[in-house]
Image (cartoon, rainbow, N blue to C red; front, side, top):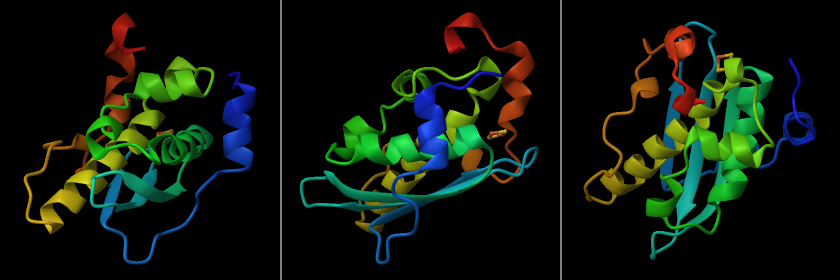
Length: 153
Ligand code: FES
């Protein structure tokens, strides 16, 4: 399995590791089959722009690298644009991911969605992302590995 230099860089030197005290929104997602857990905390300004983001990921190298790049990509973005990031966007930004590792990038994008909805709900506003499967502790993203389609990867 070959990883790009950028994946290795974000794995070896992950950016924005940690937890933001008094974060405006927090998201935690994971899956039971590999035990990976991802937690992201964000601060958001009055115009719904993400000011800061930090993450903690207990998991594989691809999950750490994708979490790291997502925290970089979302800073300065409006929450509505940030939650549009797909696992393919994340993989492209990292110079590609092996297909067997594509599901790992879902943790970061899903964690962000949960954090954004947490922020909105805390403000008494309507969530915009709806149900996130990986926020369910019984969710298993590896279930999709054997029956993905080309478009998905
Ligand atoms: S092995 Fe990376 S999230 Fe499952």
